[in-house]
Image (cartoon, rainbow, N blue to C red; front, side):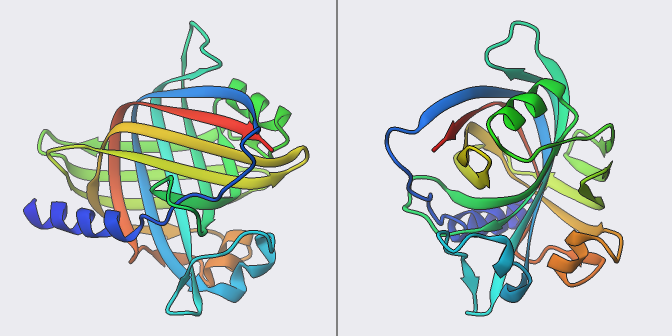
Length: 251
């Protein structure tokens, strides 16, 4: 367990890349609370040529060893998702895949969103209204079998039109005994401007995992990864939190 905690700490520090800066008068579109959630997050390197045409030139891609980009895959399961402060929250899941980009240091990691899918109809509707390409996923498997020591397995599968189908199989190696605050910013070019999603995690528990992602060989994701089977050497984790709040703005 101590080895896992040290490993996550090292990765955590190395990923502190900062946030892309945008106009101070950005309009707040809506907020989302994610409650009682667990997630898989994986980071892997790909040749930068695989993604250079998918990211606008105004955004600088983080390079590993000068020639590689970092692909981030996160798959989330929440007991409750509360959009715009709605009284009746609903459970939901989401899949988000993107490219790590440079920023100014106000967030712990910045990514450019390539694909975003969710089972939550209200979240999908609000992101779409903000101009972001978002897919409603009706076939979304998130099956975690974890014991009291935080060890176990995870299987996820995301299947939807207009979204690269993908599945992740993980061996969960345990979660760190203490949490850390964390801020993640994801941006993407939308129909109404730059859509920015900043999520603040007051208490995020990082955990270790050994995972493998599969996707159809002819999918857009396979083209980005350069393979239909990928592992995650940059970060391979199974995380959890009680509540996190995302603020969505359009610039």
